Amino acid sequence: LERSKQLPYTCDQVYAVVADVEQYRHFLPFCTSSSIDLRRGPDSFDATLSLGFLAFSETYTSRVTLQRPVIVSAVAADTSLFSHLSMQWRFSDGQPPGTCEAHFRLEMQLKSLVHDRAMRQVLDRVADSQVDAFVKRCKELYGPPQPPQASRPQQRRQPQPKRPQKQPPPTPP
Image 1: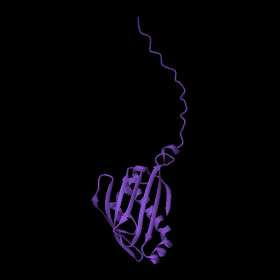
Image 2: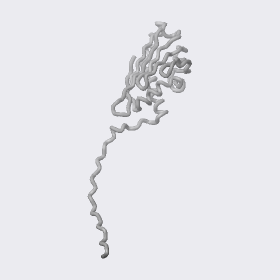
Image 3: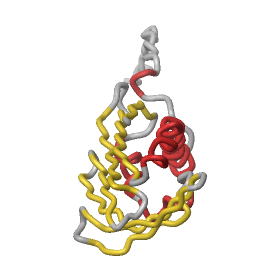
Image 4: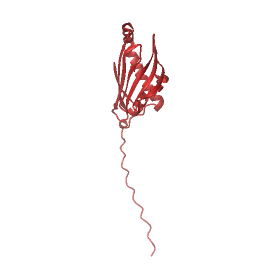
């Protein structure tokens, strides 16, 4: 499943929100808890996430890898619900400048075929709500989108007519 969306925030801003996994529990639908358990250096960590959706409930470890400000990727481990779960966000500068082209990819396979089929029925809506939650979080943190500089019409300044210069008074002899 893939989604692409142009966002009215910079790549640094969007990246910061997506990379802040510890805060997911505060804004991401279906995420009931999130914490960082083990830092593996400045660009990698293990996080524990708990999800709850319909009849599904799962706590698992996610190995998160960062490439600032371009990629955030995660692969689930220690999970009883998923046979495979991975996601990746890619960010590139958008047009106009000051915007971000965000690409989201989710690969998921539940261990139970019955559960997998049920989840696939609603997966598009779930993915859309996830992407929308990140956009909303950007708005909460950075304020409403500002019109990009490049899209503002340039006003041409009209040349001002030259005023005659005052002559200094003559000096007395």
